[in-house]
Image (cartoon, rainbow, N blue to C red):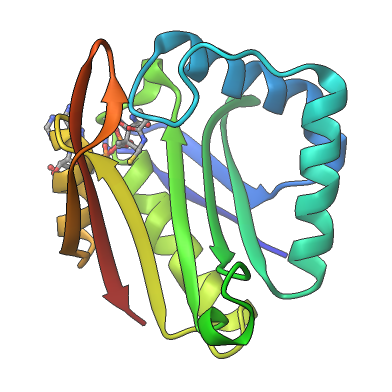
Length: 183
Ligand SMILES: CC(C)(COP(=O)(O)OP(=O)(O)OC[C@H]1O[C@@H](n2cnc3c(N)ncnc32)[C@H](O)[C@@H]1OP(=O)(O)O)[C@@H](O)C(=O)NCCC(=O)NCCS
């Protein structure tokens, strides 16, 4: 289980630890706030209940124990400000066990302070240790999300494909861009 800390660009102390089903109240608030933003996530306004979030995190606990998932929460002054997951791709059964997908959200009030970059670095190290046989990490972003593109490129991800107009975002169709990195 991860338990570490780092200093943000502005000098704040951020602590990082593995998620747990016990976190369901703060985790629900966190994802519902991001969803209400209608930003570049798959969530676009949907609101989760405590029960839904608790069930999701309980499933995450099992996947973490099985070595199929790394899910980390980042806190500043006790407030949940960042969430990153790297999960083994089990949809393709044994054919894709060597692949995992990364997803990340930083609270809007804490963006641009180096949290996303630090979380990717910490989560990749953990994933290499815990997700056995991992060879490829993939992720995707929506074309207008240039902050995410810059972040991912600065971490070593490279574009490996795109579906033109593959995502519906704020009343228009935008490219669904896929990236990958060998680990
Ligand atoms: C994308 C996201 C995770 C980035 O997290 P962050 O903590 O703001 O990113 P960082 O501060 O670590 O920035 C890392 C790099 O990304 C780029 N970047 C991030 N925010 C930027 C901004 N506002 N302006 C310019 N560059 C930016 C820079 O290249 C930066 O590198 P540098 O610090 O060496 O200049 C965050 O903006 C977010 O959660 N957005 C909403 C949800 C989302 O888009 N998730 C990703 C879906 S694909």
